[in-house]
Each structure stands twice: as structure tokens, then as C-alpha cells.
Length: 222
Figure 1 (tube, helix red, strand yellow):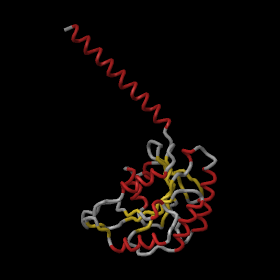
Figure 2 (spheres, one colour):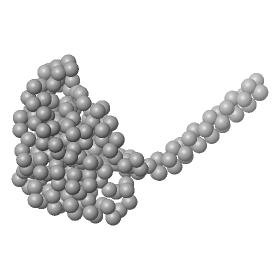
Figure 3 (tube, rainbow, N blue to C red):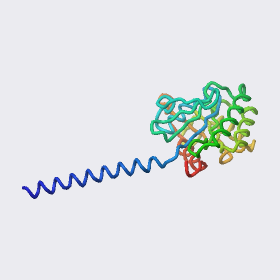
Figure 4 (cartoon, rainbow, N blue to C red):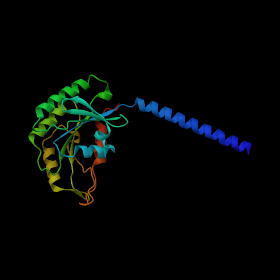
């Protein structure tokens, strides 16, 4: 009985040592990780927040702390500090382009003076897929984002899908955008629906492809 108790006690000590060592190494490696910063643009109401929360699995802006970056723009951090979302909430593309572009230029220039984890790495420009229009002001804004050196991913939000078929209006708009030959990742929009609608029998879709495209163009260190 004594030997059995001794063996059990030793096993507990070994198990605790492993747990403590694992946690210590995990914390050390976690500290070495950078932060990935994503800038989000698009008109009010296109579903930017829903899309971001669906992709990253939590309500980032609601659970993080809003840190002003420039006038009208905030950097939100997730709980672990590994994800930063630069949100231009309150500014409207097509109406506040001058302010947005000034903010963007200033933001990128200031961030490039900082370590890589503090820079913006990728930009999403979001369009509601069923709006049936993509304005020239939006196209110009996408070009300007690319000109400051950010990879731009064009995201169509709230796109209905039945089986393997997207809504024809969203497909037509996507083809129009492709014809503009904008400097966007993959040369095409990514069609998504971030929130499942059980009433309309609409599943979520497109999030995995969007996530892969985003991290493929992000700096490896981020």
C-alpha cells in the first residue's frame, strides 16, 4: 500500500510539473506572437461588425477597449491582445472620402514607424452584395487603400445562397467589380453571409475562404 501510495504521489508530482512547464512555455511562446491588425472600411449598415465577430468568434469591439487611432477611427483589441480591428465607424465612404483618406494616410504613416505588430496588415472593403451597385467613389477609395501599401480584400456581405448557387444579383455585381480590374486580392470579391438566418433558410458561408485569403496576404510575422 505504501509503495502504491508513493507511486501515485510521484505521478501527481510529475503531472503537475508537466502542467506547470507547459503553461510556462505556452505563455512564453504566446508573448513572442505578434498582433494581427485588420482595417475595416465600407458604408454604414453593410454588416462589418457582424462579419468581424463571425470570423473571429467573439464580439471584438464590445469586449475590447477602443483606443483612438486618428479622428473618427479606433483600434479595438480582443481579450488576448492578438487581434486588432481598426474601425472607421461613423464615417461614410462616398460622403467623407477626404476625411477617411486623410485618416488612412496618417494612420499608415504613423504605424509604419512602429514595430510590425502595431502596423495595419490587411484591409477589408465591405459591400452589401444585394445593393446592386458599386459606386466609382468606392472604386477610387479601394485604389487609394492599395496605393498606401495595404492588401485589399473586397467582401460582399449578406449574400443569399441556395445550394451551390449565389443570388444572381450578387453574381452580376461581382462580375461588374471584376471588370473594373481593381487592385484587390484575387481580382474578385469574396461572397459571404456571416449570420445564419433560419427563418429564410440562409446558411452562413464564405467565411473560411475569406479568412484564408486574409492570412495568406498578411506578413508572416503577424
